[in-house]
Image 1 (cartoon, rainbow, N blue to C red):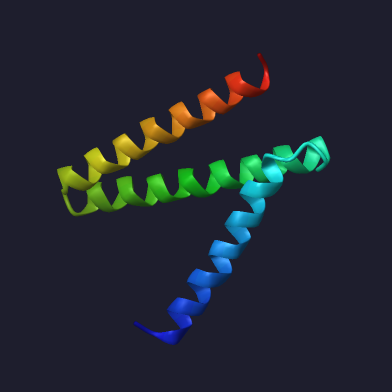
Image 2 (cartoon, rainbow, N blue to C red):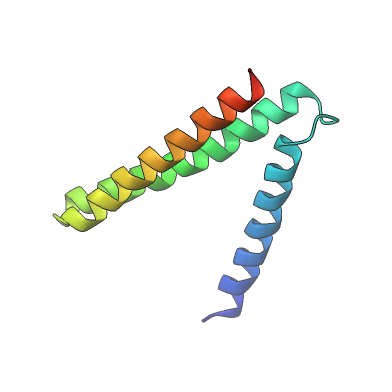
Length: 87
């Protein structure tokens, strides 16, 4: 594994941990929490879209099923968090 890969992985992990932490805190302004939540959702939608594109391009049904499962899991997690916040 390349040192640059490790560095990028560490930086992205720190960023995502900070964003997820800030999204769950009440002392962060609501506008920033919504922006951070949209950033996380956008990243996962990009990841799923890239998986679907690769699955269609290379005719790989396993990857397509994995992308569909990931989409369902993330959708359920967002829905559960929505219900937790607004009940």
